[in-house]
Image 1 (cartoon, helix red, strand yellow):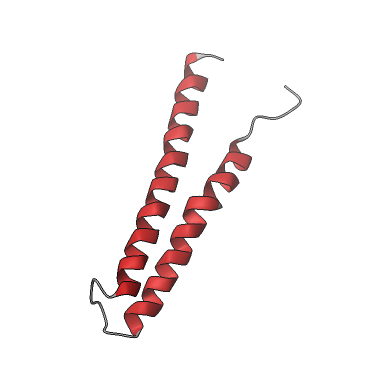
Image 2: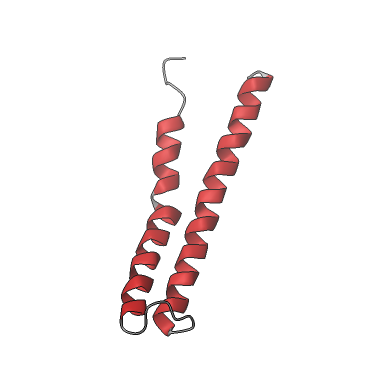
Length: 78
C-alpha cells in the first residue's frame, strides 16, 4: 500500500464514520420532532416529518455505510 492508497483509505474511513454520525443525529432530531420538542408545521404534521427523518437517519446509519464499503471494496483478483 503506497501513500496515496493510505490517504484514500483515510478519506473513506472518515466518510463512513461521518455517514454514521449524521444518521444518528437525524434519528435524534426525528425523535425530538415526534415528541413535540420543536414545532415546524404543527401537530400532527410534525410527527409525520419526525417519522420520515427517523427512517432516513436509520437508513443513513445502518445501510449507507455498507453500500459505500461494498462499492469501495478492493478487487479480489489483485
